[in-house]
Length: 268
Image 1 (cartoon, rainbow, N blue to C red):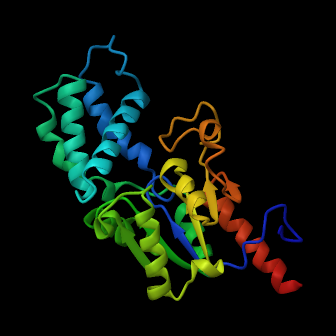
Image 2: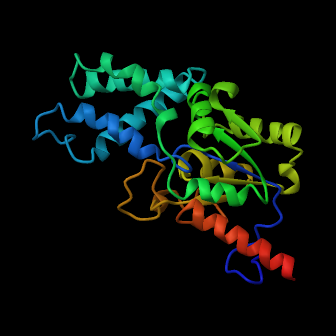
């Protein structure tokens, strides 16, 4: 049901928000692209993957990392990144001499990627109203650096990773782990409608959210456009497989709407 003072459905009944981190809170694409460009810039200028920014190369590398996630679900993400970029450089880009110098740094780079400008102000607003948790595909070393160094002073009540779980989103196993631990660790029961998932990726987050009946918010960050450069999936192709109840351009817009709704509820 929409709030009386808003065009959006009510957001005040949830007790906790679970977030995807990279792509939603952290500028994953810029971080990813910066390393991909090191590779593609070594290619001949006529090469179709030597573009600025190297969007198609990023998408191909991301497809490769997803294959590793599916086939080796217990391999930590930092190792998947290192393996993926090495394979991509040698086999697809034919650059056998380069990847050894960038593979390990690339694997450890997510912890250095920066948040979107709206992320921390938005989180500081949201934490006044909800418990906050992260459900991420990234490994523990990188996520710890991100939470402690990049997202502070925002605070999270729980952080759950693919490394903890032994599988990667969109596996239902990751979300079932979230449900179990939110109940045990935070006193939040998704079966009572107390948990709301907030994410950018349609493929990794919103498709399984619909399959599991988990309410969700799409922080689209331009992903609703047909010319979107991201890797979270095409809305036009996936619209029948997702069922998010809210869409906002940014986390900041979402946080502002939450504040409006809680303020209106207090006045009523």
